[in-house]
Image (cartoon, rainbow, N blue to C red):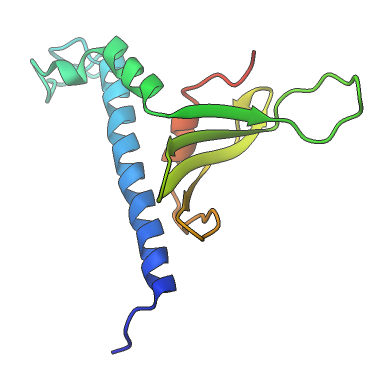
Length: 150
């Protein structure tokens, strides 16, 4: 069996970081949805009993929103080329999740200050920003929790 190269190890680290981040964000967004749809005893609409009775972590919508707001290290936008004096809106966004070696972020496109695409990227020393092949809508769903306008 062939020994893994440094490139193979790097791409495995990229994939692992993307999957771990996706899982963390999925849980956070699931908790937010739960808090919005549950009165603490049963789910609203279907009347099913709540699996998280007494668990404030799943019912404190304000607390969950604070967690979401505090998850990124920074959020930035940028505009494309335009003529001098022309008023434009941001076209791209970056949600920085971690810095150093390695660093992680979510980047994507904006239309009318709303995210329309998003993907995860990973960066380590002497390596370019790399997007793993992972099909997860959680990065776009997470990005949509933020407002990218003025």
